[in-house]
Image 1 (spheres, helix red, strand yellow):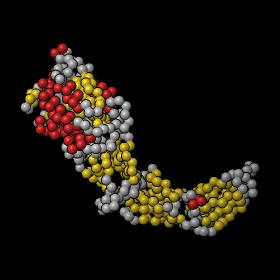
Image 2 (cartoon, rainbow, N blue to C red):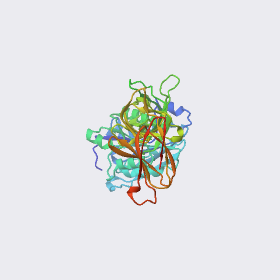
Image 3 (cartoon, rainbow, N blue to C red):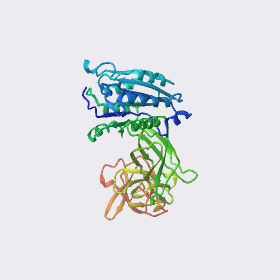
Image 4 (cartoon, rainbow, N blue to C red):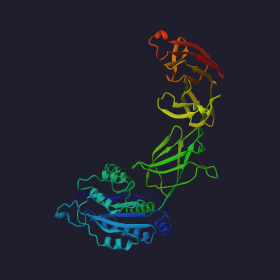
Length: 463
């Protein structure tokens, strides 16, 4: 087995959740949370016989892990299991990359059973980390409401040409585990970088730090932490609220929580209970939506996250456009082609502060560019009151309505060829209507009528 005995690597793969103070305190806590399942993966490769601090690495790791197990005894909604690798075949007999075994299956109140089996383990062989992680996935029976956690303790690098990082990401993406924690002892910078792909990295330089880190990890596995999301206005105050928010697991892409942002009775953003192990992406369902990617909670603390969400209102008023006409406006961010929102005329809608382009679906359409929406202000756009046009045709046939724009005629509306009478709302202006009876076979039969539309007035064209 090739290994530098001066290095002691401790990988903690944590797939579950939450913060606390001491393990014993959390062990006594009565909780109605979903069942938590913790699988301990223990490195019993030959390098664990190496000297470290007050004894060899195997002795220290067994002692500290046993102490942690004592603190977990009789914890409600908790099941534990133990998987060991490198303990079945001596490295002198050849490398065995399948040397991994579930020694104690999941069950409640089995800390003594795990401690007893752990005490008999003798380090012998190699370090098949990737293979062990793949097998560990099979140790968790199907349980949609369980929180599955793996804590792996090892002092060596992968020796069987596997890719622990790829396996870890696969397990996370499949929803079997959450983001791992990596705790390394004696790692130089190059080695540290090689483990950052697995999860969060912690450096343990001695027995005391080892014990502290192990306790912190188990504490996070058993508890929840709190957070608040500040939607900041233009002055940096968390005054924006009443908007939907969705939190996603960054690794799996699954939505973990959706809620309506709320200010509590004291006017502060309400407190959330979240999993500090998960790395989140957040979408705030403003118009347009805004987001915060790859943020993670600090266990044991009240986490506060702020995101700029300054908003104002846009109101588009149009006299005499009733609900029956369903006139709408396409709202886009200035200079962009993608529609941000479709707003009904005479509605007042809240937008993220900024500049917007409007395409109002009147006849003809009205285009307004660089309309400003600012913090806590209502920007009001008033469009002219339309007029009414009635077209009476003596028979069926094609008919178009064109608007005079200087010397140019622009098509506004196509009348149903089969309709003999059509009434439409038009913006004030000068127009031309063209009509040709369906049976007439020459352009000379085209009929043309010019007319003017005034606000609030009616006009008619008779062919």
